[in-house]
Image (cartoon, rainbow over all chains, first blue to last red; front, side, top):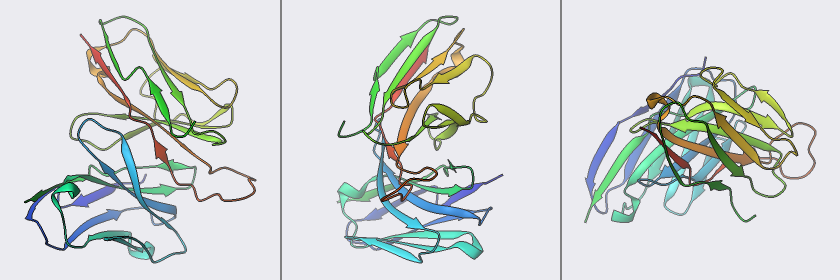
Length: 111
Length: 120
C-alpha cells in the first residue's frame, strides 16, 4: 500500500527565500508524480507532472525532481513570494490508476 | 467544459438524509476520480472510473457510499443515511489517462473546486 510523507508539515519564510519541499513514498513502482497547490477552501491546482521516466520538470520558478528508486521527490521554489502561500501536495500515481496524496506542506511567505 | 465542474459547492443536510454530489469532467476525459478531504489532511481516494465502469472502488468507506457514471461523462456520488462523520469536502478529478488511448495521455489529474458537505 502506497504511503506518502511530506516534510516539513508547515513552513514560514520571509519573501525572497528559496525553498525545498520534500516528498517520500513507499512504493517506487509509480506511473507518474504530480505536485499540486491548494488555496484555503479551494480545489487542487496542478503545478507539475513528472512521468516515471523523467528526472525533473520545470515551470517558471518551480522545479520538481524525481528519484523513483529511492522513493523521493522534491519541489524547489525559487525567490518565494507572498502569493506562493498555500498548501503544497505531492501525489504519486501507482499501478491501478490510483493517485495517493500526502498530507501536504503548509507554506506561508511573509512580505 | 473548460474545467471540472462540481455541484453543489456547499450542501448542509441532517443526519440520516440522502445526498447526491455531481461532477462534470473535462470534455473528452475518460478517467474520473472521487476523493474526500477532511480538514488539514490530503485528499483520500474513494473511487475511479474508466469510462462508465468503476475500475477501482476500494476507497469507498462502506456500502452507504455509491457512485455512478452511466454515460461515461457526468458522475454522481451518492451517500445514503448520512452521518456526521461524512462531513468533508468531496473532490472530483478527471484525466485523459486510460488504456488503449491514442494521442496525449500523460495521466495528469485536473480537479474541480469540490463540494463541501456538512452533516448536522
